[in-house]
Structure formats: C-alpha cells, structure tokens
Length: 345
Image (cartoon, rainbow, N blue to C red; front, side, top):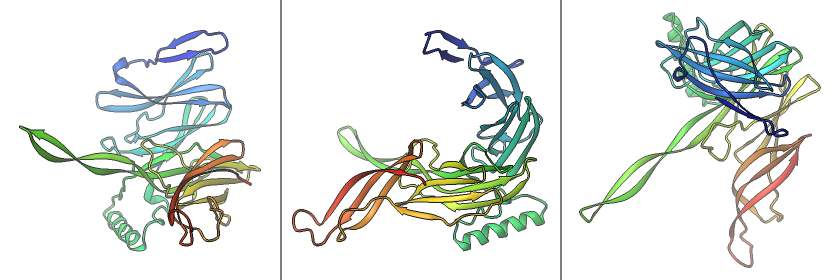
C-alpha cells in the first residue's frame, strides 16, 4: 500500500497497490517517483507469475486516484534492472535504466522506452559494448582484450556481454535530443578479524564485510526521438568515499535548452563538463576544493564530497592531510575538515 497525508487538512488515505490477475504476494514495489511537472506519482511494480517477470507503471494523481496501468515489458525476454521516468509533455513519458537477463543480478546494457497516452511506442535495448567509448576509461591493454573477445563472439554470431551496476539519471531533452547519464559502480568488501572463545581458549576468525560502492566512470548517450543512438561518451569519475547505498554523484543542469552542464567531484577535485546535443564537449574544467591559507602547506591527500544545496549553490566538504615542514609549533602534519560553499557559473 501507499500512505498519503494532506499536511494542510490532516486527511489520511491508504492506497492499495493491486494488479488484475496477480496475488498481492506476487507484487513488489521497485520504486516510487514524484513527477513535479505533471503533478503525478508513478509507482514501479515488479509482478511475478509462473516464472515470468514484468514491470508495471501505476500512475496516480496527487489525490491518490489511480489514472492508468501500463505493462512496459509485455512479451519481452529481458528484465528491467532499474527504472527512471521523465515527463516530456502531456501524455508523453520516457523511461530509462539498465536491463539484464532474467537470471542475472548485474546489468548488461541500457534501455530507452517511450509511452504516449499510456501506450508503449518503443522500447530499445543497447548492450554496453554498443557504446563506442564505454571502455575508454580502462587501460588500453584491457580495452584491447575485451574488444578481441567481442569480435570473436560476433564471428560466432553471438553477442559479448559484460556486467555492470549503474545508477541512471532522468532523461534530459536538449535541442530535440534525449540525453542519458549513467554512473557505473561496483561493491567492495573488506576482511575483518575477530576473536571468539571456546572452552576458555581464544579462537581467531575472519569474516567478509560489505565496504560500500566504489564509483568508477560515467557514460552519457544521445538518442534521437525514435530511440536510436546518435553518439556516446564516457569519462572517469572517482568519488573519494564509498556510499553504502546507490546514489547519484553527478549534478546536471540545462542551459538555454542547448547544452547540459555536469558538475561532480572526482578524487580531490571538482570537475565541470558541458555537452551539446550533437555530442560536442566543451573543455573540461577542474577546480581545487580549498586553499590551505599558506604557500608553505602541501596537501598530501584530500577526500572530498560534493552535494547539491539549493539554486546554483553546492557544498564541497571533506578531509585533507596537510604537511608543512617549516611549522614552528606543533606537528608538521595536520588533518583538517573543510567545507566550502560554491556556485556553478
């Protein structure tokens, strides 16, 4: 169920999530998205029946009334691993995310789906390796090895698949081109040692513990309005901390309906990039997070985060280890926490 509360009147409402032909136990809510432009709430529901798996879109108005139900994956063999909706105009929505085989927990590519008046007009799937620059963040030897495997598979009439986890942004519309952004990541683990006692004797044991998601690179793809790929680009992004949940590190903004500005932190820097609808990229700009206040200071390392605050303002914060050999009093090294208010121009 969904629960709604009118904060002005205090009125409460329980909204059951049901699908004709399915038992409640066969339904799992994948995600919920509030669409500010259309004043609607979209509920993405995974529906399971006799080995099949479909994803439905339930569309509610802001009063909690269900307006429509759409099956995005009817007669599809592939599973939508993630989903995000974008409102284009009245009655028109774009859905995007990653897809996988039915038995896989990772993703093998990206899809783009368009609905008009709750009817699926197209859904197109793109293997990650169909993107020309998807491997560009890797060392050249590793790229060559994967491309050799790809060519071998193609000679056999098959398709090479590589598995990634990726968080997808909502689609942006720039000068008639749909732009997709995906941030790739992988789970990391650490080994912990602990001691237990048996009959008064200590026993040393180890266990594997989840240590957060490491983000590695991002991909941006341009599609025409029929869902056909026009161009793609990939760039490294290496946030200096690993979140324990899936999140979007890149912040984007549309300028003059002709270019898409991206802002994100990577290692100890802030990076800004601008993409045009034809795939052209303006020069990448790189900024340091903070000045230490002394020319004699040397920053040994910096762990930084960039968070959207409001309007054009962001907060950059993190930790730095600073070394100053000529420090007269105290330690030659010091670790500081910094926070900056910055604006995107």
